[in-house]
Length: 160
Image 1: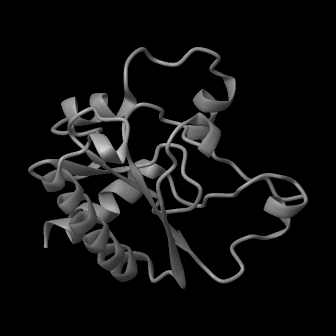
Image 2 (image 1 turned 45 degrees about the vertical axis):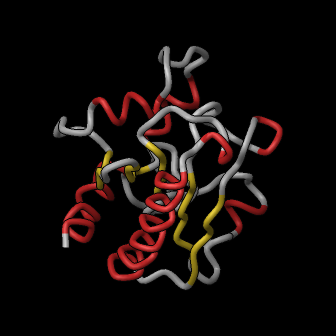
């Protein structure tokens, strides 16, 4: 039997208590830290790797400002968010060559938001056949790339 390892998920799986405060606000504050998962800081919004990705290259785009809903964001924040989504599409296409992308926003816990209270948009690379027996039968997703390695891989593309 093959053994599949995803050690970065252990903290997520075993932790009953989350770190206090907003994970996206902490990302903004730590953006200059070498171990930060922030790939790109814009004037009003930023791009960060998802620490618990659905697939390799899974990005979250968010306003810097802590706003919960689309209606709370300014027109400038919304415009920059969409421009970053457009840039993320191009970067992921160049860096990962996916067959497609999922782009989406979950507003509120009932809608599936894991980070409640801070608006963010998911951009998830997809490949034909990436839903395999592990996902279907084992209810387990295998992510072959560490989020920190993905961050280092994508930063140069966003810097262009």
